[in-house]
Length: 455
Image (cartoon, rainbow, N blue to C red; front, side, top):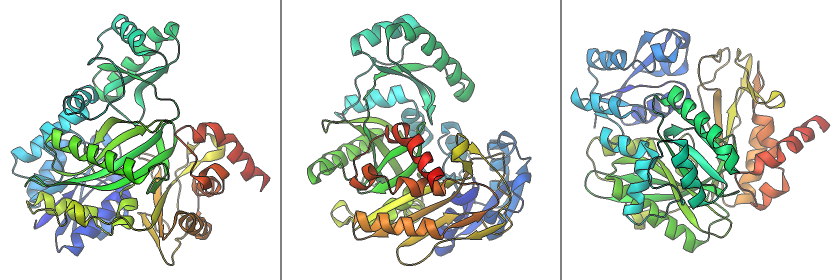
């Protein structure tokens, strides 16, 4: 196992990684920006080093600063968490060049799977079903028009290097394509420095189902079941659960096998996520692979009993997986609600502020992952996620009731959060029945907000 790990991240995921390292007896080095001097991960780490001003490009995205700290503090590994540089192929390669173990896949794998057009082609070559789309990237709007005619409208114009809904445009009619294509290319260039685009058939109102995989360097690849991430707003997930009510045992087996095949095709090592869309006819299609730990990984941890960050560390250290596919056991039901410092009634406007009073829920089957404490100032410079409430129970209905109770116990004073909005989702009849898809919030957001006003 490693002696000392640099955690190249902040917030709740930095705290999560710190805890896993401490339980393994591994020293930790935290990095922080000037805005995060009082952050919880800074206080919990064995050692902490300031790497720059508040702006992420000058601190958490400053590769030279991160690698300098890793060398000077004697780290033998680096965990990137999620976001920031976690899926940056050049960063992973520079770590390897310095003899610093990057806790994740290789730069080559990140590069291949991070380019959605290349990942799509790789999946096709290995028999993993993909959404009908263009045969590789499209260079011009005219090429896009020809591809769209062949695919059939509606289509999605997507950035090859994209993520989080950026560089993506829905096109319903031919006359919209040129303008949407140019918009997507401009956004992709601004966000990712890469204007390459491709087209996919738009699967209307699918379920968003992702499978957690683990792969070691000895050739073992397993999946740990699925997470249903269909409750999302503008491609940003808000509520996740496992298992999905939409999957039969046979469909789960088929999708799990496809996820393992996808990871093998990529030559993958470490923890990763294979994302699928599931249409209303029960057909599933690969859409992308996330080459990192996911925000919603605790859902899988609660139904499997595994510590995924511990597994990441073990795999990166060259150890074999701690279990086989036959030994994977999925028990009960888990739900996660993301609590963001946002005002749902004001269009989910980010609302940073000082945590004047804080009380987290507890009791059987309740877990909270957060960096908050009384007096902590939520920074305006970074993502608005402040806590994740995760529950586990024997059945889905019991898990829903437990999550309602947990959110009712949660107190965060000083700024609005999405906790109340999540609480309302858990009372909606369609959610309770498990009859929802990625269009759920678009269809019901105003209804939910009006419920809140009525109360």
